[in-house]
Structure formats: C-alpha cells, structure tokens
Image (tube, rainbow over all chains, first blue to last red; front, side, top):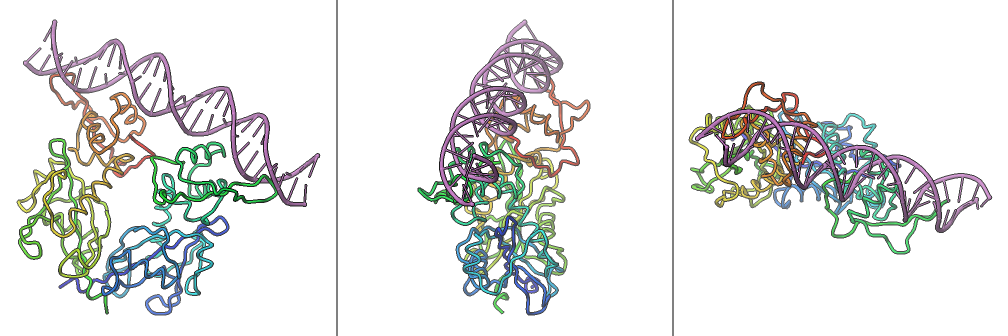
Length: 220
Length: 220
DNA sequence: GTAATAGTGTCTCTCAGACAGTATGTC
DNA sequence: GACATACTGTCTGAGAGACACTATTAC
C-alpha cells in the first residue's frame, strides 16, 4: 500500500514579541537530517496518545518549550516527496501566540528565539512555513484580537496600537484607535492598574474572557 | 515507530450552484467502511506519483468527477483515532468551486450532487468537513471573487449579486453593488454579449484573467 | 517650571446606502 | 401599449480620520 511510504509530522510556529519585533522559537537539531540546523519545534504524531494533530501540537509545545495553553491555530498542511529527505511526508502545521513574559518564565534551554525578519536558513521547508504563519498573522490581525496574544496579559492601549501597526495595519491616530477599542469592546480596564513613566499614567487593559477568539468585520 | 499506524488521505469538497442553491458532489461508497453511505470524493495519497496533497486532490477530482483545473484551495486537516474505523488517520481536505455547466458536461456517473442544506448522514466525519467548507466559502466570499467560480464563466451582474447574497452577505441595492464592481474592477464586460428576456438585455461579464484569486479589504 | 505621553472632544469630508428615475427588451 | 428587469444619477446621514485640546506623571 502506497500510504505506508508516507509519514506525518506536526510542526509549530511559536511566535512572540520582543523589543517590538516578532520572534519565532526554534530548536537546534541534533540528529539527521539537518543536524546542526535550526528547525521549528515538531515531531511525529503519536498514534497511541495524541487525540488529534492539535493534541500533538500541544504535546510538542509542552515538551520542547514548556508552554501550555497558548493561542493555537492550525495553519496549513505542507506535503510532498522532497521536503524531508526521508521520503514523502506531511507536516500539519500550527501557529501559537504567546506573551514574551510567559516564554521567558517557562521556556527551557531547548528553544531559542529569533527575529522573524532575520532568520537563518532553516531545516526542511521551515522558512516557508514561518512566512506562511506571518502572512496569516498579519491578515488575521486586521479583523481579530490576535495581537493581544503577543503582548503580556496586561497592556496599555498604546502598546496594543503599536502591535496592530507593526502587523501591517495602516497607522491611525490615537483617538481613532481608541474609538475602535471602545466600540468593539473586547478589552476591559484593570481597575487601579496603570503604567507609570515620565507622563500621565496609562490605564492597563486585558482581553475580556469571552472575547478570546473574537473576530470582527474590520478593525483597523 | 508509532507513525506507521497513521494513514493519510485527501478529501475534496466539490461545490457548485444549482437552482440558486449550493450543491456538493458525493460518491456512494461500495467498500467498507461505510459501504452504501455517501462520502466526499477522496482517497489515499499515492507516494509514487502525487507531487503533494494538492496534486492528490487534483487526481481524485479528475478520476472521480472528470474535472480538471477548478478553483481549488486547501481547507483544513482533520485527524484523530476515531474518524476512520481503520485507525488513526489524517484527512487533508480541499474545497473546489466549479461552474454547474462544467460539472454537467464532464461529470461521470461516479458523483451525485446534493443540496448542502439537506445532506444525508455522510461517511466518516464528512458532514463536518462540508460544514467547514461552507463556512470558509461564506467568510471568503465577503472579500474575494470566489462566488464567480460557482457560476458559469459568463454571467450578469444581477446573477453575481444573488450569489454574494446567498453566501451570507447582506443584500444591497443594485446601484451599490454595481458601484463596488466598478471600483474593484475584477470583471470585464463581454462586448456585444447580452442575456435576453422580457426586459432590457443584461450585459454579460467574465472574471478578468489576472483577478482569478483576487481578494479585497472588503467587498460586500 | 518642562517634557513626554495619556486621554478626550469636535469638525469635516467622504462614501455607503437609499431612492428615484430612465432604458430597452418581450409579449 | 404593459410589464419586467437593466442600468444610472443624485441626495443624505453616519462615521472615519484629522486635529486640537486637556490631564497627569517624572524630573
């Protein structure tokens, strides 16, 4: 049966925001193929234990990055005879968004963070997968709350606005952006919590619990 | 190796428009599992010949429905131990959009068309897959030229408008819809070709060649 | 005090949608 | 002629964006 020659893996594009730039978590491979190269955290599906490919992605994230319960969404399935030298393969890919705090606190030594704007040559077709994830993230940011997940759980309106603009939405003025936030009503102010600095204190917000996967007709 | 227990298939949701309703192409299964039930056209990946899962989807469409070169896009990958009684499986799914003319002219006896609004219980998790495809089609119709593919290659502005409205976009007046068409400029009038009836003749249009996959910020 | 950013109020101009009117075929 | 639908022009109200103003901290 031809399908015996086909094998299936799961790979995860784990993204976060560091110094105003999107970073991706990579693992240095210690085995062939591509030993010594960086690759996305991934692995074979475990038929005995994984409930589905999403479960496999969660397992991989937990094992290689110590991260549980991030925003996690299926990205695309890559396939073909040439993407892995071991033979005809599938990679079901996911992308995950996490707060930088979270990744710094929990990540073990297995992963390293790279600026997506300056990636080295990765193993397999993983550069293509990261590009695909960035495109999806940008597209979806225009009409969803996704950018919130790249920030710490509590953030100011201005911080959120810069993430939206970083992800390709055209800049708007403060008051326009705040009016949108008000109307779409997916944030809640954290009573009495402010960010201080050499200026008027900034109200901190968090994503409302029931808005964790909200999308809108249009946001920015 | 655990991945030997996992097998991979490709399934295609082939959609078209008949009598103003979206229809899906199904195949009656003659083998177990689910012998006698209707299922999406699909099959195992052929590692020897398929260049990737898209190629496998094209092969399946050509073999089971006699259809080549439709609009074809990857939908989602379904997976798990229970969706197929033979074991832990992946299904990489695609959706295809074709003109009803095309399907009537080319389709062989292997497929039958069903109104997606009144489907029987399908084999495997195929009902869920069709629902997923319909959701994607509706979502993407709001900002793309997708509805054009459900119509014959040449159509009137009013016909196109009804497809957009069928797919969930709020109805707008004729002049608003035409203004949008004018601005987005993805149709070209077919010189001298009109649809006649008990009324003023209607200009027929076709999708511009370079707009075959166009998306916009917002359409309807 | 100054500097710096947070946050708010208002004005205007564009454009989406409503509506009404004209065009051109069949019968 | 009637009728049906194609197609076009104009008006108006809502809302996006520009801009100016006030607020509150650090130093």
